[in-house]
Length: 263
Ligand SMILES: Nc1nc2c(c(=O)[nH]1)N[C@H]1C(S)=C(S)[C@@H](COP(=O)(O)O)O[C@H]1N2
Ligand SMILES: [Mo]
Image: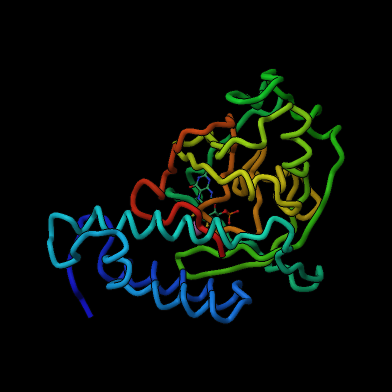
């Protein structure tokens, strides 16, 4: 059913937003009455009532859709459990070869020089110094085999290793009551995440893939790996990160993808 057309998100996308939120609620909200209430609210009509805009009025469509998406962010934020772990897998289930994806082709993968590389850390942190790769490798390392889900319709299991992001944030004296952590990449990619996910025990500043130095195509020198979020939320080639209370969106998020992006 095609209700309306919007420049960025189509009717199909808006239905997907609602469907995704309902599936999430079905999966994560254990209390039956609360689950039923949230699911009833999560219809396109229900959301248009909640957001106070008419979805039949074309001039408001995009505003409504972005409000639905922001509402979806809040629901996902509310039901996100900081301690619930994403599924992990045995090494025998690793997808080989692991797929590459970016907003450009594999022949245009960014080559970052590891020797001169410095990770910039700014915003609401006590220690704003830049980090070299050997310094990051000297921090306690963790490894996990998890599933990466891309909204383009594929998922794959991979093995990433690196520094627990929570350890890193505490080490630099980040204000962990701040709302966001933002990332700028060596390509034109950027994204930002909620602090609860930044502190999740499976969120890794990944320096390795399958036991080897992270190859360029998977984001050398470093990517943020979050098995609780969709692929586009996992920035590769991170150059700078900042802790902030100001919303800064993301490359795909600013084009209509849901910001929280949980899976
Ligand atoms: N810097 C950067 N990070 C990025 C992207 C990108 O284009 N540039 N694409 C995202 C998307 S949509 C996906 S699915 C994953 C792909 O990661 P992979 O190449 O390791 O499979 O990277 C994410 N992070
Ligand atoms: Mo993706």
